[in-house]
Length: 303
Image (cartoon, rainbow, N blue to C red; front, side, top):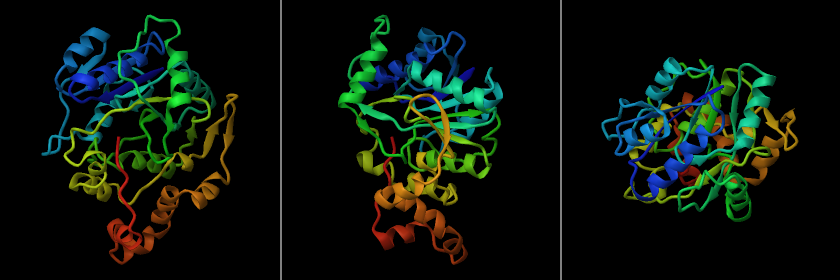
């Protein structure tokens, strides 16, 4: 069984619509799912009452007001009712295929990380969850009109309790923390399962009005660079997973796809280059910024 935990933007306008959609979808996955919402953002308490969520009013914040990931991971693992947790961004709608994937992976191994690529989809209205066909309709919309996001953009992390006991003070709402989570599981030799072929996670598209530089700024401003430094040059993507869940529900080892993908994808080649060059760059005091300047590689924006 899973305890979901997340944090939200203020529940206003379109953000209120897509965040309610996401949270409600998680509660429908199983009668005993637990959902924890962190933060005192506008409307959070009301949404928790309406949907029957656990509200953790307090969350530690950076002086900028951005929320600390390490506090939420630590607190969630302390209070969760279940042995498996899922941190997800609060705009991701999950459906029954996600639950089936979780059951298959949990039956396979006790300790694991499960991630997958999202489908960016235009959702502008509240989902009618009373409609028995809401999930099939949304899945069809995503697959026919959505964009399958790149492997370096990761929005949900299903993991066994205790995997993330030592998280640096990264902030959400900026880049690099998602890649750190994947790298850390791999470093601990925990199997990481890519469920992309089996699951259609729907990311409800939104603007980036909360940042003066828009989407680009979330991957390049001082807070993003702070995350970059705190991550310790650690970068992992979905392609780094040790296993994948196939479309027919089998769990298979991944062998050469990371190598072949990085020969064709500039972003994946960038992640590989950072990892390979880190030991000597660290030794000579060269950080990620110097490598980026050398290659003129732009920062990755964040969801």
